[in-house]
Length: 287
Image (cartoon, rainbow, N blue to C red; front, side):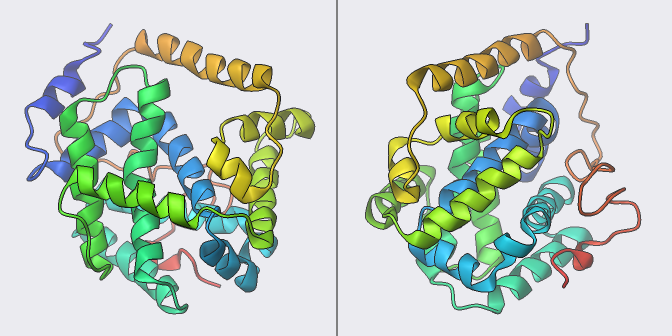
């Protein structure tokens, strides 16, 4: 078996301030690729607990008409930044698309800052619970420094200067803004339906209960969803922990010295088949 912890040693040798792009590329693309994608799915789901965010999405009707495309656009744009770096040609192009899409709407600075915070902390929280190994401090700090740099390039103001301060902002924002609204419920249900569509051979009732079991109490209240029986949540979480023990025994994915598109190499992407062959970031989010 290849050295399972070779990537970890490489991460520990890097400075999380100056080397945050390389650390996150290895962590997200090679150490925890499946977990990182799943955690960002739930990070986006989490933002729909905010009436100002869900209300905007309801007005655009994008989640009603094209939920899979909207999800794929977001996932691939963020993956472009991680794979290639936010100042690379593809990274700058992806950021131009992100800024163009957001610039069409009136979005408060705090809402933008909150969504950014979920990209930092939801993967960290997911990996703390279900990762095949614990995250090291370099990985936590690198995630903060990476997305803070992205936030600067998105012209988000008043970004916290430390990991702890950004966590405090996120927690306070959720205590203040997570309240039930009809648009929360509507966008939340579209998202549950989207998740269920990815598993067509599993009964929808079972898949939806499994999805809802991963929502914490504030999220369930904000969506107005009934929490599934505790046994459902215990089974779902137990399955992920079992998976983590199996993954721990698998050979390491080798991250080469030069950047490689680990996250954007998605030939089976539902909206953009064959991605990235034949596609550029500028084509994402286009009508």
